[in-house]
Image 1 (tube, rainbow, N blue to C red):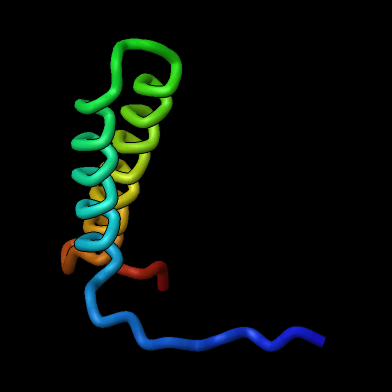
Image 2: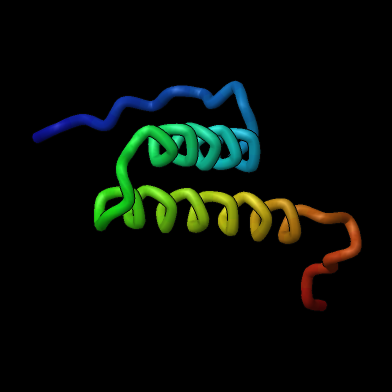
Length: 66
């Protein structure tokens, strides 16, 4: 049976997703217009949205249900 490696993340999820979005945008800038570039930009938007949602969910104004 395979064992899962556990490692402690040093950066928060929001920072990792934002960095991934930036990396994808830079990579997309080097590609010519087309399907591959559009796919990279779509993934960058998804990572950016995920970062924003995670930040919103962790915000102090959001209260757990009673």
